[in-house]
Length: 276
Image: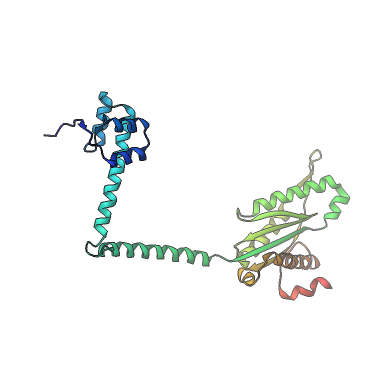
């Protein structure tokens, strides 16, 4: 037969005052000083809720005691954990704590290793692609600058559709665009450059809506890659900006000098190409 929950007179202790201060109920603190508060620490939360529904406790008092029980349960669990993991004689952690801690450290080490392996497996490189519209001056001269602007806008739309979410398209100046491809190996970057080159070639750009006039264009592409290890001894990384741009530009120049509408990857042999 279950013992019926009853309200017992409060035995005033510093513990209850501390709990009241921790919970922060002005009503409870006032009752503690007068000694009219009842001791409900031996009850269960459902008993306190029952007293609340019966009108034997005010809502703020019920909330206080529910908070007291929660704090008390937390302290008991903490104390139990300390007793279960502490050596009684020496007051250092015991064998159980040793096994638990060792297990956690092994799990942490494994997670860290997997994370590092994943990072190391990703390409540590940055690719810069420069694109230039072939014979764009003829577009402006023949159809006007407004048509030229429509071609530029149309090209930008094609480029944005062809790149990944991690890539970024920029208008570098005039009819020239730049695309940054981070964490991409050279092979994938080259595949992307060829894909973009073909997509532009297949696209048709509206230059006169009323006459439904369309125009096809091509682009020349230059691609250069900078690897992470090349920055290891560089104190100011911005010093590499002009070098990477110059390499992509040299590759772009090579594309234009060798037939246009093509993709060229920068190599060390191109250092003097642009000077000729």
